Length: 288
Image 1: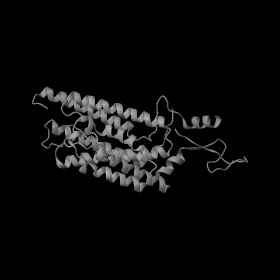
Image 2: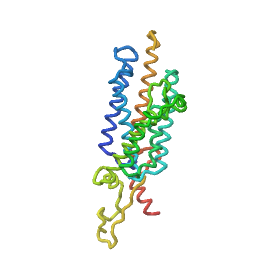
Image 3: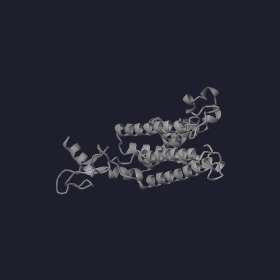
C-alpha cells in the first residue's frame, strides 16, 4: 500500500473537521427552514447569516494557511494545479446542479469558486512579509465599502465584489472582501514558517529521509562520510415537489461536503494511481 507523500498536521485537520461539521449543521438547518419544517428562515436570519460567514471565512483562512505549509514542504506545481483543477470542476458541478434546481438563484461564485480563485491569487504572496500580507488583507476587506458600481452588477463581474446590486444567489463569496480571509491564512502560515519549531518544521522533518546505513543526525554509522538527507517533494406546496427538491438539495450538499473534504487541504497526502512510496522516491533520487 502506497504511503501519502505529505504528512498530516493534526491542528489543521481538526480545524478543517470543525469547519466541515459546522457547514453540515448549517446546511441541514437551511434545508429545514427552506422546506418549512422549522419557522426560522436560516438564510435570512441575522444569526444564520453570521454563522454562514464565519464558516466560509474559516474555510478560506485554512486554505491560505495550507498553501504556505504546502509550499514550505516542497509541493510541486503539478500537484498544486491538479488540486485547482479538481476544485474548479467541482465548482462548475455545483453551479450546474443549483442552476437546474434554482435557475433564478443558482451559485455562480460560491465557496469552491473562491477557494480556487483565491488559491491562485495568493501565489505571489506566499513569500511576502507578514506585515505586508496583513496590510493587503485589510485593504481587500474594506475595498467593497469604497468601490460599488452598477457596472459590476452582472454575474460576469459581480464575483469581483464591486457590484452595487449583485444577482440573487444561494451562496456568494466574491473576491473582495473574501480574499482577505485567504491572505490572513497566508500570514498565519508565514508566522509558523518564520518562527520555526512548530508545525512547519514538523513537515520538513517528516519529509526528510536518511539514506540506508546512516543516521538522521548526520552520523555515518561507521562510514567516513556524513549522512546525506533527501527531501521528498512530492419550494411549492406540492408534497411530491418538496420531496424532489429535498433530494436535489441533499445531493448538492453531499457533493460539496465530499469535495471540500477531499481537496480542502493542499498539503494532504494523495493516495491513488500516481501515489509514490517516499522510500522508493528517495531511492530513485539517490540513483539519479
